[in-house]
Image (cartoon, rainbow over all chains, first blue to last red; front, side):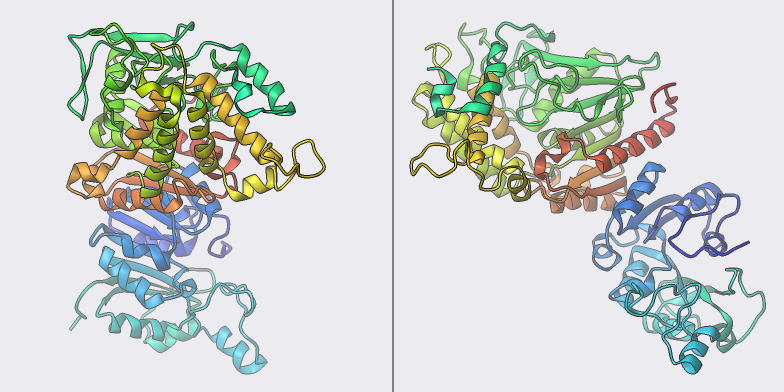
Length: 218
Length: 409
């Protein structure tokens, strides 16, 4: 199966994008879910169909919102940076930020808000520690352009890129705990072996984390 | 005095005015709207402690009610709207106010849904209002008519819906003051509203909007022909005052961008300014026309009452100051819509509604439509608005188990 970059046209529900399938797997059936940066609503649709969730979305683009509303999804036009603050505490079981963290102006505040609004947060992002990214910078001396980082440095919306290691550090700072984590390969499939963080950080093209609020695992 | 003597209106607009003038009946005179009358044993008790009895409600319907009575949509009209949402308005001879949205194959699909639209209480198109004869005096109510609120309007609508034997409305939709009614419906009768579309509206009337309304009311009351609201009995009409009220209000329905595009500083049928107080500019001529066309179809006292109803609207105030409490645990599906250039009911007002619905755990969609047409955009042909409405209603219809009509798409 070919990988479809985030934000582009979705595949049919019986063949969902692999990274979305990984996220969907982390969600308990029947949960209340807020998908921040929900795009055309592919994930919300998948969650509704496979997990019977009560899903809501926030999306910046009018086109995305219209597509979602036309699909019967409850989606609000809004901005992860400014509008999450208005959501009440514990309004949802899960708050999902899929391939959007790196495009927020204040990633730390966004993540903190997510863990306030929901007891659990699921975050997926492109890993800037991926070996091809490192290689482009190290050997070609150019800002990396990969399957996940499609834009050139001057027109990219991705203003806050991080590595898996960076992200784990931020999670620690926020006093959250990583319940599950997965590094995904080029095809978007999880890397199916136990490996130390530095291996994931090198070979994962993107990562998905299920976080839980409050208290690190001792 | 002939209306066009009022402002010395010229040429292009005059021609259009004569078309309007042919349709003479004003405010209940000489035309017979569909009406349900609730006898004095079923009065409307108002928020202000008043009582309207008997209560006549003028309405129009489009499409057919299904056997299960599950496909009814209530359309709530704006400040000076009426029950003629679609088709031809018998008073003005013009298309209904929501012609862009209501009809076969349109988002409010008359092949699929049963649409009800009624004139608000306090109005002048057949529903009981200040121009109605007060049964206790035999004279028009005038200012003796009780000041009504948005909630009173909604109570009256609920009586009409009961009359139709409809338990739950599939949707309640409306813009501006109509949107206030939608919010009030969702708060007052959550179990009777399956889905709701509050459009270009607010959960409370802002200080600026109250101020504009006050300008309009003062213009009406400053007209010597207003006669403390007793003008009907004295055979006059405060047309100048009402026209000025409309002119000032009309500016708030547009945007600078729309006025600029339509008129700019263009002169009206002249190549140079006349250095007088003639309507040199096209925009002046346009506003004068709008004022005159309005007095042809609207009652001055009704204008006082409907603007007042908006001013008093503050939904949160009825729920301990918390708008979220107004929608707590609601099962209604909401679609909130605003327009970028609407400065009368700006997007921030819609966002406040959305935040309250979110806090109350409601199912809500929110779209801000890009448009330079100002507040009036909700009445016009806006493709993105039409697509949003269609998508929202389609999904709500699927959830409600309403079959798609054969040629509805």
